[in-house]
Every structure is written in C-alpha cells, then in structure tokens.
Length: 179
Ligand SMILES: CC(C)(COP(=O)(O)OP(=O)(O)OC[C@H]1O[C@@H](n2cnc3c(N)ncnc32)[C@H](O)[C@@H]1OP(=O)(O)O)[C@@H](O)C(=O)NCCC(=O)NCCS
Image (cartoon, rainbow, N blue to C red; front, side):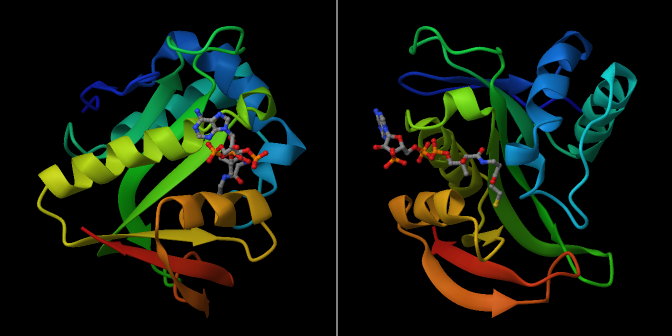
C-alpha cells in the first residue's frame, strides 16, 4: 500500500515509485550511505536491484501512514538526485528476525543532501505522523560510530538508551522519543 504524501515547510515526502530507480541506485550504491544501513551493510549494485528495493519498501507499508517515504526538496534548490533520500516509520525487527510492536524512525540521504537539515525536518514530519497514528513513543537505532545520525537523534530531542543487540542482530545505539 503506498504511503500518503506528507508536506513540510521545505519538503515533500511521498511513496517511492518505479521511476525513482536511478535515484535509489545513486543513493544506495554509495559507501558513505550504505555502510550505516542494515546487517550486514550491502550496496545496491544495479538498476534491477534498485527496482526490487522499491517494490520491497512499498510492500513493507501495511498502512498508508507507516512505511518508507521518498523525500523531495521543493523548498531547497540545487539538490540532486530527486528524490534525495528516504524517511521511514516502520516496526523494529528483533535480533531473532521478528517484527516487533516497537516503531522506529529512520533517515537515509544522498551525501549532496547532507548539511541542510533535511533529515531532521523529514523525521519531524514522521514524528507527527507517529503521534497521529496513536503511538506512545518512537525509537531510532544507530551504529555507535555514526556521528551524523547520532546528531540527528539529539536534534530531535531523543533520549539515548545505550548500546543494545536487541534489534537487527547487531550492536546499535537505541534512542526513544515519548510522543
Ligand atoms: C545521517 C544523515 C541523514 C544526517 O544528515 P544531516 O544532513 O547531517 O542531518 P540534518 O538533516 O539534521 O542536517 C543537519 C545539518 O544541516 C545544517 N542545516 C543547514 N540548514 C539547516 C536548516 N534550515 N535547518 C536545520 N539544519 C540546517 C545543520 O547546521 C547541520 O549541519 P552540520 O552537520 O554541519 O552541523 C546523513 O548523514 C545520511 O544520510 N547518512 C547515511 C545514511 C545513514 O547513516 N542513515 C542513518 C542510519 S541510523
């Protein structure tokens, strides 16, 4: 089910589409991006794999208000590609591979889109969505040396819970935000 579009002051968050495969490949083939994602981190190798990722992401959306959004930047000029990244609100996967009742927010952007506040602005939109969905809290899990992502959690006012191997089968810094 495609996620419902969300608008912020500078951004449009909308469902990923097949025609975004070039952007997905550009973003997720970069070591600066994929090294911080998944267990184990895996690059997107080609356009077929990019299209498969888009299909998988859209299949993850079990409601129009939860899933992975493509982020465009109509309010910021000169950023390429468009969309320039992903903002997500999904169930956290436990280390035994099950979907939990705990929701995480997350952010993945092309390096040319770093340094504009885009991750923080899109995460705030998803925090608003999580609140509208009736959630009591959201988490964010970050590799311990991912300084830029830890800084996003701080900007959002999240509380750092410490390192845990509870999620995704790897040691990550868990954060929570009460809604
Ligand atoms: C993690 C990641 C999303 C952080 O991106 P980011 O651009 O640093 O984060 P923000 O959106 O919060 O932007 C903050 C920066 O924008 C600057 N900025 C510029 N204009 C701004 C504005 N209008 N509003 C807010 N911040 C603004 C801030 O000063 C800050 O700059 P600094 O880092 O030089 O201090 C990005 O590094 C990334 O995609 N990494 C690869 C994937 C990844 O690691 N994902 C997270 C997995 S847990």
